[in-house]
Length: 127
Image (cartoon, rainbow, N blue to C red):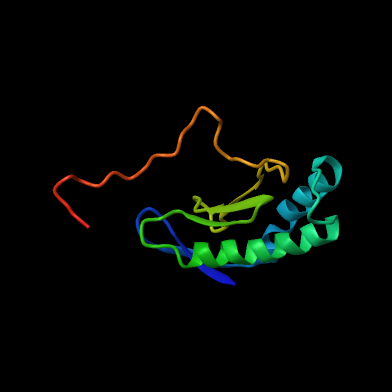
């Protein structure tokens, strides 16, 4: 749970709000609906996905609450979803829920034209 104090540009506190998973109930419901309709996933049922969304939202809130000074975002992700909470001009953070494109059948993440870079040792160092 996050209690965010919202201050105006002049630094005067206008009001506070408590941010919880329930704060983003509408966004989670939209993501679950899209998941059930459009997303093919071999790892999670729609019920498991919804439980995962709740857990990820808690992690994103925690990351948002504990972000370093000057940082504007809290982030949580797994293989299927990324949740980003972003500081806004209102007391309620902006919430972005993104589906990650992932294939369990993909063996190599790099294209065949890309070669791994080997670390070269300098000639003046001896083992």
